[in-house]
Amino acid sequence: MSFTHEHDLFRDSVRAFVAAEIAPHVNAWDEAQGFPRELYRRAAHVGLLGLGYPEAYGGTPADGWFRLVATEEIARAGSGGLMASLFSHNIGLPPIIAHGSAVLKQRVIPAVLAGEKIAALAITEPGGGSDVARLRCSARRDGGDWVIDGEKTFITSGMRADWITLAVRTGGPGAAGISLIAVPGDTPGLERHALAKMGWWCSDTAQLRFNHCRVPADHLIGDENAGFRIVMENFNGERLLMSAGANAFAQVCFDEALDWARQRRTFGASLVEHQAIRHKLMDMQMRISSTRAWLHALVQRHEDGDTGPQWVAELCLLKNHATQTMQFCADQAVQILGGMGYMRGTKSERVYREVKVMMIGGGAEEIMKELAARQLGL
Image (cartoon, rainbow, N blue to C red; front, side):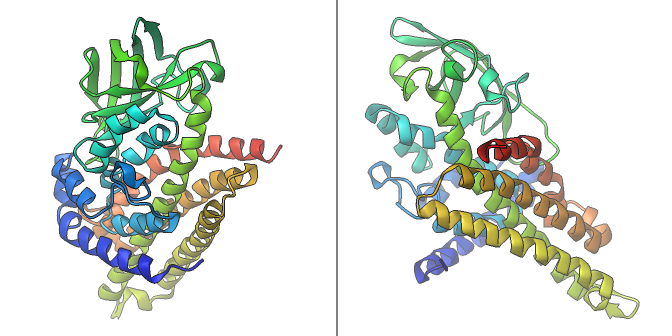
């Protein structure tokens, strides 16, 4: 499928929003290690937060191509941290949309899509990493409540989330004992600690500690002890968006490097006139184009309803390919920019710092390869 006129119009509107509301401020927000909460409301006002969500909750039904457009345009600002936190609801809300009760959906979703509340997802634990089946944070029933104890780490939007979609152990060992619970951010006993990071500076990232936190029983998402499959389904959406974001940031690096190579002169000629620089740019373009083609193919198959084992396997491999493309292009862009590429304030410098979290978050490369192999029956 090619993008339609409606997609092109949407792209223009998002590009204008990014140019006016985000791009002029990302450097300052990165240095300040945060961005104004008001940006959520502004993004909601232009339809970005509700994109792809049901109208009944304030969303705007849209196909995956609209989300792809939004990802590409917001990446133009060159800040993965901004994207991660502003859209943390895209990993926090889907389990509630798909499996929450009608009452829970109404309680959580409308305010998040309106930019009034912030939603986050909390899966990873200090000692668990990618091994979701062995998480230890627990929840036990006590009358009409769940009582939660344990820790989570590396949680995007963890410091200011108003709703936390939390994976907990409610049953026995392994995948069969995991559930999901929607935890209000003001729950007594919830402690938050900010984490310092290599990149994504303007995205708040937290370690969470739950000390006998009491949450109403009707905040359970789906059935008790049925959370593992929900988590795995949610990862698919996250990995597709991460792949799109990674390739978009690779394009940002290419664009900045090309612009610099056209302006910068050495030995009596612009950089782009030197064969070595042109070849670097073509190596970048080759990887971006191949990643984009694979991404578009998987988006179309998803739109056609194909989410079987083969699709999941390719998605895992695409996530690796896209982040490797991002890594390569960030490295080459910094090399082309030379000393300027090492200076804070260039997009390529920021993307260079941020690429590793993309290669780890949502499933590290090694996990992606193993999951793909299993999906293919190897």
